[in-house]
Amino acid sequence: MLAASSVEMRKVNKYYGKFQALKDVDLSIPPGKVTCLIGPSGSGKSTLLRCINFLEEYDSGEVRIDGQLIGYDAPNKKMSGRKLREMRRSIGIVFQQFNLWPHMTAKENVAEGLIRVRRMSKADADRRASEALAKVGLADKFASHPSRLSGGQQQRVAIARAIAMEPKLMLFDEPTSALDPELVGEVLSVMRTLADEGMTMVVVTHEMGFAAHVADQVGFMEKGELIDIGSPDRILHRPQDARIQSFLRTYHERNSF
Amino acid sequence: MFSLAVFFQSFGPLFWAARYTLLISVLGIGLGIVIGTLICAARLSPYPQLRSFAGIWVSFLRGVPLLVQLLVFYYALPVIGLDVPAMVAAVVVVGICASAYISEIWRGAIAALPKGQAEAADAIGMTPVDVWTRVILPQAVALSLPALINELILLVKASSLVSVVGILEITRASQAQAATTFRPLEVYIAAACIYLLINLCLAALGRYIEHRTNV
Ligand SMILES: Nc1ncnc2c1ncn2[C@@H]1O[C@H](COP(=O)(O)OP(=O)(O)OP(=O)(O)O)[C@@H](O)[C@H]1O
Ligand SMILES: [Mg+2]
Image (cartoon, rainbow over all chains, first blue to last red; front, side, top):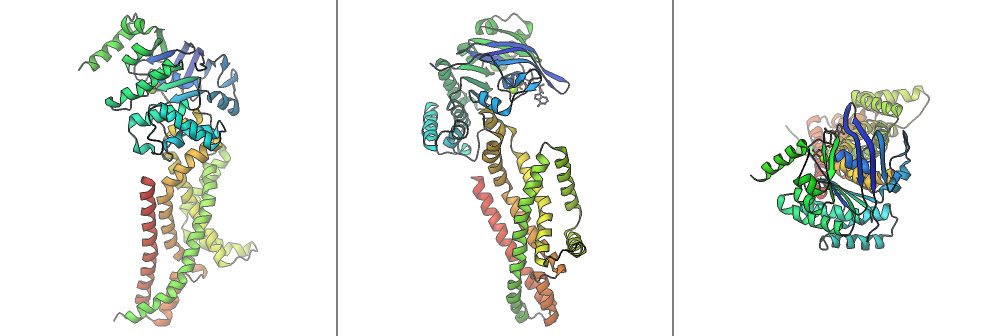
């Protein structure tokens, strides 16, 4: 079993200028569980996810990782860069657009953080990077630059880059949305393996199948609010709230051509 | 009648003069890269005074013709009691002028990088220095190389202006040659050929680099 983190969000608010992107969000993410976030475009899913590793700076409220506040030492007192980096080392994130570094090979992409952040020797980092790439099924692609890989392969390199750092929490922001439909499965199956190993995962997704079968809890967001959160069965099959019902109806209509 | 003999004879002295053209252009772009990098860093810094200084630097140098900059610099130095060789003055002025354009080339390349590139590095806990040296700059430099080669080509041509401060580069040398042979057309066409040759080589280098960074 991996060491797995928990996340507690309390009354989190986030503004872009006058626009309020997150409204008093309360969210508990238990260790070793998979939490999926769904909701319409622009509802604040990415913003919420990115507040967890402070890529997005929330304006008020608290985000705690294993009890430790991230981003601030106290209200309105920003945490030092060094302390924030320390906390981020154990939080992996996978982006919709992969964000691989194009001037590095697959292996260099994975080894970079091990060398720079974990201060590993080049040899150790290479070994760890090879293991991570093998784990996502890319043992034959070590030397390829991202531009030579398919979208699904690129996203798996991005996952390898994150898990090589041995995170205790993984954040995924629509990891399959930029992929051709036939490449979605290979990425989801890697994510499912991670979930089975007991990784704490927060996944923003439009893949309702993944949410239904892999998630331990599903949260629905709209207009910056977390409207409801609960078991996949309750949220996806027996939704109470009219907004969730309408969202799912649109989703089903769109996906049943 | 066009004299082929004069035309071909001009190449010797003009090639000899081309070393000054190349020296001024290459040293100029070297100095321009150093200063331009500092100016770009100032422009992107969080300090408002530095940012506005760099902004003024760039708009001033881009707004005043190189020829006028050269003349002002050259005649200003003796006034403040500095006796600087013409060659040094020329390289400094060309370098300073280039710095404004190079700073903008860097800035454009850095702005062209997707935000996610730095975010991915921040997110795994890389320090700002590592983010810049390992992720942003290598890509920005690769993106900028064609524009830098282009800037070098512009400098080779602009260096003809330093003839006004008495440096015997290609243009000045061809003026002298034209005066002694009384055959300006042949001599200037020869000069044009040499400039063209230098710049075609540079353009080929630029294409080679662009091709290599594309793969
Ligand atoms: N940097 C920004 N500046 C201003 N507004 C922003 C910024 N980022 C996001 N927003 C706004 O905040 C709201 C929430 O954005 P967010 O990206 O979190 O939505 P989302 O639920 O992830 O949507 P999608 O499904 O399209 O990714 C949107 O209305 C968006 O326009
Ligand atoms: Mg989003």
